[in-house]
Image (tube, rainbow, N blue to C red; front, side):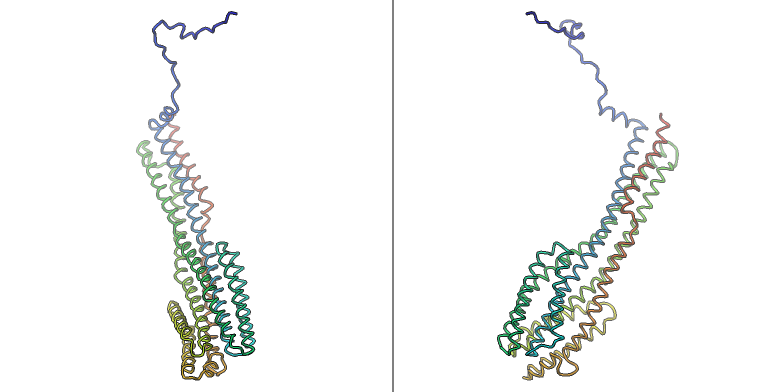
Length: 439
């Protein structure tokens, strides 16, 4: 069967023997077409158009990022500051309850109902705050869960101490010491770890508030430089001194940069002032109250030890020093608060003198408030009420000022990208007018 062979292409058939076949002419490459698009004055106009438009959009993104950064940092600083106050309130309630338990133990038999009620309410408040803190900050949940377990052990030991103390059994004091050890060695280290973690979070957010200003100002300045170079090149090449649409785009970027920069700098300054005043005051007051309750507990434990409480007395002195140190950091009219603590210090010295001189019953009478005025109960209560009131005021002020700083920011966060696009469209409009002249 004969096979039909296809004829060779005409170009090959027509080529003489020994002649090299030349490929057909190819269309210009894509790379060459792009190069031609940027050739000459129209090409350079297109290059400036793309550069200025791109920088406009980048500026819009930078402005949005800057306001998102500062606004978010302010919101997180507010939330983390509230969590820190919450954790410190847990700490305060625990040492307050422990102070009630140790002081009530000195009374013997049935403790004063008011003191018992305060112990119960303090432990309940701590439990409620633990649940609230776990919801507010998921990162703290595991540690808060471990803390809750230690408090179950602590409360069990306290109940054992109360039961034995009502019966006049000496073993009750050992249960009380064991409960205090659980609190000091197991519970409070967890609380302190939570305090440190939240202090770091707050400091990180306060530091991050100023970063938003950098985004807006740097982005605005770079974009304005590109606009200036574009307008300058156009003026030299076209002999027209001003391109109104492009100049309008530059003004839009300038106004956004100025308004945004000033607003963010103001918010950052307000946050810095809050950090250095109300926030630091809140920390100092919280630490002072925690140390004060610790001192109160150790005063009672020293008496409970009956002559062998040197370690508790040293712990009292350390806590007393912390209170004095924290009170010295307060700025403002705090003379009554300081004098309240000094009044308690004076009474404590009397307690120690009586105990040292063998007047244990007299010392206990002063410590539990049965010796008339002044006594440990009345002087400490005066300090407690004053410091608690001031702490509430300063904590509220922190939340209020951070919220005001965040709410005072203009809506550039969500207007940033539209502003950038608007500036890019103005550049395109202005440059298209000049490109039309070359058609």
